Amino acid sequence: MSDILSSFDCNLILYGPPGTGKTYHTVLYAVAICDGKSLEEVKAMPYTEVLKRFQELKTPDTGRIAFTTFHQSYGYEEFIEGIRPRVEEENSGKLSYQIVPGVFKQFCDEVRNRAVTVSSACSNIKENPTIWCVLLDGTGHSELKTHCFTNNEIRIGWRDWDERITEDTKQLNDLTRAVLINFQENMEKGDIVLIEKNNTSIDAIGIIDSDYKYDKEGYENYPRKRKVRWIAKNIDEDVVALNGGKRLGRLTVYPFPSRRIDLVGIMHLIQKYDKGSHFTVQEKESPCVFIIDEINRGNISRIFGELITLIEKTKRRKAKEEMSVTLPYSGDTFSVPQNVYLLGTMNTADRSIALMDTALRRRFSFIEMMPDTEVLKGIEITEGSEILDISKMLSIINERIAYLYDREHMIGHAFFVPLREDASIERLAAIFLKQVIPLLQEYFYEDYEKIQLVLGDNEKSQDTYKFILDTKIKVQEIFNGSPGIDLPEKRYKIQKDAFFKLNSYKEIGEGL
Image 1 (tube, rainbow, N blue to C red):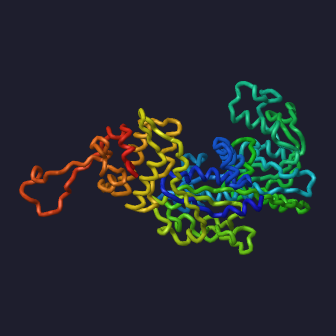
Image 2 (tube, helix red, strand yellow):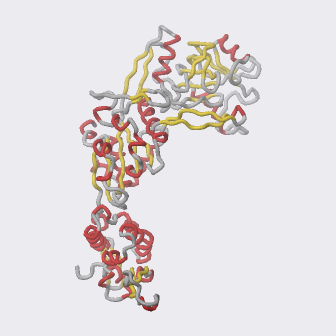
């Protein structure tokens, strides 16, 4: 796998005019990188299979692909971390502020945590234990909590329900069912349990030491129990940082997401209270991809901040010249994992590479994505004996655009791909009216004389075939006298009927 992956640069941008399949290709590249395949292997697969695999890799449970889109107001706070307001539920609308990780920092943290395998020397803790949060009759002090700490157990209620809850148990809402099934079936011996003190802190750490038991006479209204070996009780440990910056929830029993919880940090916390506890950490760094669509639309210096250096291959975590930074809001030490691939797309019609931030250009490799008329080979629209070759038509249009403007503003082949399913003059007319003409108007700042040249309207055999119809203006009929300024000699309008005539398209390149 390493030989194949070495062919992909860790920072890569696909760039080209609109409609050239840049976003389409990010799916191919992302799957190839994650699965350790060559791009040619992935391209040979049916695209529906590739897209299905892409979605699998992008699910929260797998979390190996993430996606964001830059825009003009996108900033460091959304990408790395920032301070955001939060309404405190339990304080009747009181406003507070919390440090929230941005999408890229959160992705890197999750990638690093998923790569960790923990083996403990303590026989009570299983390899890679699930970390559970449990509320013992609410937060703070309670009689149930005192009982559980004294008797080495955890208990939850629902006394009037069946001993064993199943998916078929009626009159339970989904949240309650999830709590009970988690406690019965999903919690296992050797898992770690944290007892919630409040929404930021815990007051006990324990190791699950038995299977689920139902003890209706054991303690009042809390018959469902598991034995626990307590590592620490009556403590006060803030675990927000270990929980990926998130506060603790209000469910009675729930597992911390493995992609977010800092398992190594939890093990260090256990070691803090149990001096005899030792553990080993192994890492398996599977390749992951972070996709940034429209990367050139954002203010790169503002978004990346100090991370612009950290994304370099030689500056990443465990590299020879590894670098890390202390983030300004949280104070966390942060570095970019080696197995995170940055994959961006860039529309050259929005901004040329030459105008991009120099720091970004130096740290990314670029792959040009130009219109590929071979994709359109075989797509034809027929009307009687007349045949329109879509591939040839697009080639002629793009050659003229490159001459009159530049090659970065060509028309992409992707606009015409829908004609594979519906090769009709109506579909082609819709593509031109809704996509091609607006692009040309934008490119040439509504200089219709140049748009006419691109579409061959200057030499059409009949005016009815002209997409842009020009009519001469008689200045004397509009103004009194002779104005002493230069005035346009022609008036232009889009002639919609022409878009539904096959000859209008054929005469774009008639005789070439």
